[in-house]
Image 1 (tube, rainbow, N blue to C red):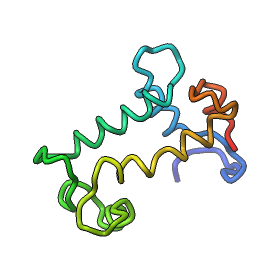
Image 2 (image 1 turned 45 degrees about the vertical axis):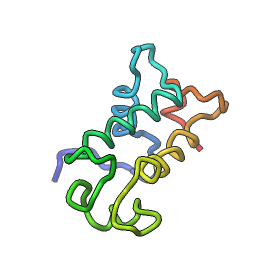
Image 3 (image 1 turned 180 degrees about the horizontal axis):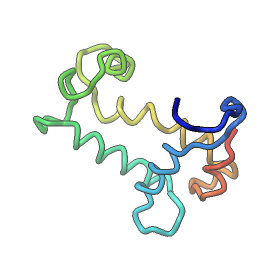
Image 4 (image 1 turned 60 degrees about the vertical axis):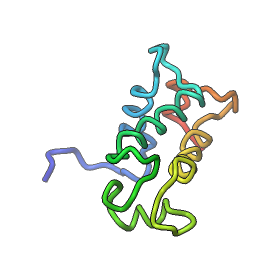
Length: 112
């Protein structure tokens, strides 16, 4: 239906979404992303979602509800920056194969 050739998607390690995101995180455009750049990117995303600028995300600012409920770890009806940033580090850690807190293009293509 999409005009794509048949294949085995379960065998693919290609991650175009994360390739794009890491490109956006690469602040100095040196084709690598430090853990600090990664963390700062998600802090900016949080601030952008915080429509009323109260430092918290409420269910109207962060959708869908099923994801809101997952991120709201203490189930108090609001998401703090800490709760928000807690869900992303595994994506960095899985790819940082040499554990140097820097991701390069090759690590984006092959991860554990």
